[in-house]
Each structure stands twice: as C-alpha cells, then as structure tokens.
Amino acid sequence: MAQHQSAQSPSAPRRTVLAGARIARPSGVVDSGRITIEGSRITGVHSRDLDRQAPDAAAAMDLSGHLIVPGFVDVHVHGGGGGSFSSADPDECMTVVETHRRHGTTSMVASTVTGELAELARQAGVLAELVQQGELVGIHFEGPFISPHRCGAHQPELLRDPDPADVRKLIDAAHGTAAMMTVAPELPGGLASVRLLADAGVIAAVGHTDSSYDATRQAIDAGATVATHLFNAMPGLGHRAPGPVAALLEDERITVELINDGTHLHPSILQLAFREAGDERVAFITDAMGAAGMNDGMYPLGPMRVEVKDGVARISEGPTAGSIAGSTLTLDRAFHRAVTVDGLTVDQAVRALSANPARLLGIADRAGSLEAGKDADLVVFDAAYALVGVMRRGEWLVHPPTP
Image (cartoon, rainbow, N blue to C red):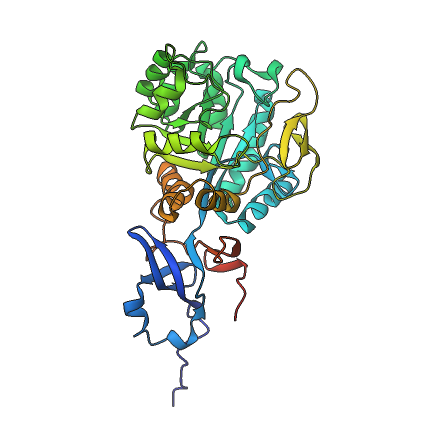
C-alpha cells in the first residue's frame, strides 16, 4: 500500500502566504490584499475579494496595517556596511550587498570609483563573478571618463578623456557584466564612446560633465539613456545657457537618477524633476559609499578618504576636500522621505525605486513589481513607513513581527 502524502511534501517548494496588507501592485495600491509565494517565486497577488475565499487563509501571515512594495532596485551604489565595491575583495563586496539588502534593495548594480585602468579592470573581474553568481545585476563604471571641472569626489589626477579603446578595455574586463558607464560627452572621444557603449549594449550615462545643452543633445542622439545623479556634478539650469539639465529632463529617452537623501537635492528640485520627466523616467539611487548603514567616522572611497559627519560624506583632504562624496543613503530611507516629506504617492515612489530601474536594466521580467511569475522580492513597511520586513527570492532577510 502506498503511504499517504501530505499536502506539503518534502520535495514541494515552500509556500508562503501574506495577507491583510496594503499591496503596491502595478495597477495601484490595493487594501487588504494577498500574496502567495511558492519557493522563490510569486504565484499570485490578489485583492481582498479573492482573499476571503482563499483555502489557505487560516495559514497566512497576517500583515494587516502594513504596506508591501516590490524589492528596490539600485542602479548606482558604491558601498555600505563599512565596505566598498572598489576593494575588489569578494567578502567585502558581499558586506555591501548584504547591508543594502537588509534595507530593501534586493537587486543592485555595483558602481566603481575613478582609478587606474588596470585597477578598474581588476575590480571588474571580481565584481563580474558576483554578477555571474546572481549576487549583483551588473557593473557601473563611474569614471575615469569624466570632466575634471565636475569631478566631485573622484581623484582629479586619475581622470582621462574617454578614448573608445580604453572604454572597450573596461567593457571587456567585465566579461559581459558591464551594465552602465558614466561619460562626460564634451570630452575628446566622448560621443564616439557613447556610440560604442550603445552598440555594445551597455547603458551610456551622461554625468560629472561640463557639457552644454547642445553637446548633451548630441550625446542623447548618439545613444545616451541615463542622467547620472541629475543636477549633481553638472552645470545648473541657466536662462541663456540651459546646460545638460534641461536637455536630460526634456528628452523621453532619458532616465534621470535622483539622490533623495535631503542633502543632494532640495524637495522643490525633486518635484521639478518629477513634473518634467514624469513618473516613468525617474530612478532613485543611493550613490552610497561605505558609511551607508554605519555611524559617522572616516571611510575609504576608492583611493580617497572620506569623513562622515551627521550622516553627510565629504572628501577629507586633497584638492577636492569638502566635496560631497556620495551618500550614506539606503533606499528604505529614500522611500520614507518620498512619501512623508516630498509629497509623492506610494505609486510614484515604487516606480522610482523598483519598476523604472528594473526596466532600465532589462530585468523587469523578474523584478520591479509584485506580479505572478516574478521573483519573490518584497519590502514590508509599518503604518509609519518604517521598514519591518525584507524578502528576497522567497527568503526573509528581515522577518516582520508577527502578532
């Protein structure tokens, strides 16, 4: 006689049911919804009308009074938890990854800092392995092909013009994992490098630039599709010389990165960006360095030293001393600020933190929204928009409190 098989056999994927929470769906936020997860994938997202009839409703985790949003996608992050992606140390790089995951970022691109080409290639080799292992989505080279007049926290003596041959070296060093490269298009070789990146399937981003309006338009026509931390490290808007900001905001082909930490952008500027670019073209990023998730103190940023005071990171020495050096932001804080300070709706914040960056990176088939068939990546907030839970691929990294 065959033995009786239980409904949840040892070989069956783990089943998780989350019920009662507000759920940020692509069509809008629903109240008292229900998410069903089998193993690492979402198998159903339902409204409360179906929830009442669910056969496994009694076994569901009750998250009433909470909000569930898709896992965040960060296309521009350098470090966190005391670690840096520029270290080229796999353990330290995973410290960065794990720190940001605990703050809701379930998919991320590792950003490097300007350095010698050989060193950047070495870093790319290590990061490429983490991409291939599924820990990262890709690599973003921020520098060395940027303007010395807008270098910010990048070491000026290591900057160079974007020679397409050098651009190709870094792409090749990433072994197919290069996701994005920031270029100042006004530099010699800039437009040719943008074209090369576009042809290679690598996102060409305009940033750390002293470009004019017209030169920026030429870069967009050549294939640029991203504005690296718009407004920061580029000329401001001018009534006679509108500069890169106007060109990047007005073109529907451009996704604009914004650092929503309250330091890099005034709320009115953030709202201006949303009005001009629209909800579908804004991607919130952290641009975080090693101090994200840590206390004030001294931290490395590539070859430089950074002092963090009151949560603001600045270069501590050298010709760029005093310059803001990335941020200490995590994306759960960016979400909280968006809906409590900036006046954005939950839908707008979710697009900027999840859907838009996922689409930009070409991973919208598995990330960026809560839909059946996608990875079970989600973030749980309480009624005050404080993070209380993080799930990645069906595993709780931060387990929400249960009644």
